[in-house]
Length: 149
Ligand SMILES: [Zn+2]
Image (cartoon, rainbow, N blue to C red; front, side, top):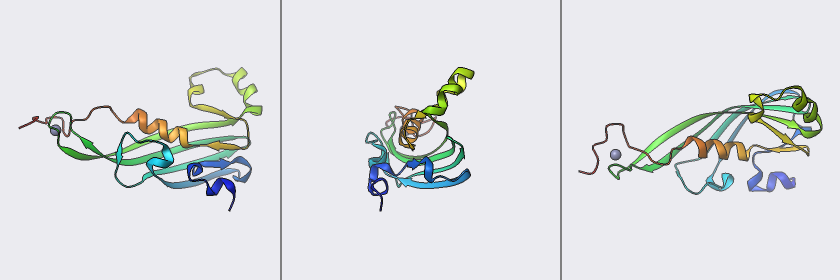
């Protein structure tokens, strides 16, 4: 087993050299420890389903991250569960190849573009940020929750 594969925190690290050109599907189940997220109560694993599309030194990642949370309604204080399904999209561009890209078009697409300098790129920050940004701070169990009875 390689050092990368044995490291629990590196479930989502890929070696560019080991990826074949074109598309491949990735399915990965993740825990809060994998993602370093401890502010939410996850029910079951976080499920990541993505396509990796490799074209030279660029890898385009698109797919969904699904997770279920146990939440407490801020209005009635009851616990409830809610499922989330969030789209993710990111381009990973190896830095040597990135310079020409950056010069040729500085546009809004840059916010989904990440640069990596070794042959490894890590999807963990993408999944982590997606969950943190997609999950509101406060929840109501339902829109017409009547509050504490
Ligand atoms: Zn409620």
